[in-house]
Image (cartoon, rainbow over all chains, first blue to last red; front, side, top):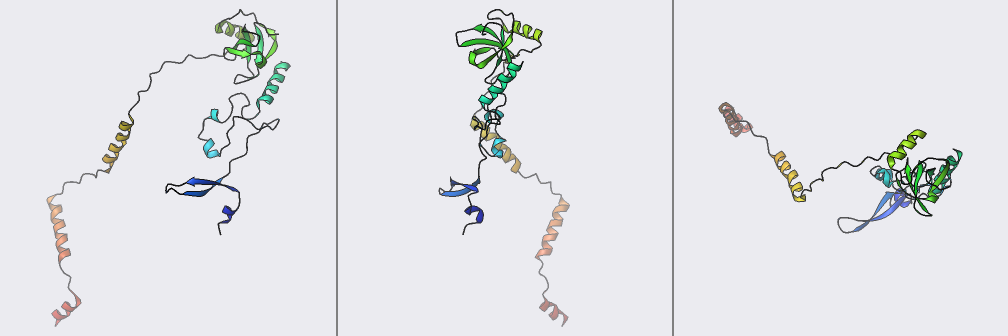
Length: 89
Length: 146
């Protein structure tokens, strides 16, 4: 009987080709959920979905769009916010 | 609303939220902007015009606009020209690989032994001879006693 953690689906299954030439089943941790807009909840584009160990080794520019509120708000919500501010000036 | 000298706020892209001035009108869709943003071509739809209008000539230089912005208490973007740097010379991969090997070979070399003195050699010979001497067994000891 396989170990209990291998029986559940909390870990994802990845087929890996090992150096011996065989394909083996490896168990890896699941990726985090997709980043969402802080105001409307839409899925953000241009954001990565990786585990922290990989994210820490990547440059900032690869992780979120390079505009104000990039990675927190979607482009539509950001524009609404900026226009609202500009009109209040 | 869209005219030369009109202050605007950019609402899209990397310069979003920054103030700029329309310097030139290129066609019915695009204008040339400068100010807190980079000096660049911009779609009218990506600008939010403000109430103020500055006296600026058509195609005014970046320095003129900087002076006008300073009067308003704003700071125009300063782009530093890139300094010329020498291109790095590419090294052959083989040469790079060979260098660390040499270092390894040097590290493995055992440290030179100190020169053995004559007294040291004599001590070693004495110790070897003692080892070679057969130990007296229990039977031999009894026979000697008799």
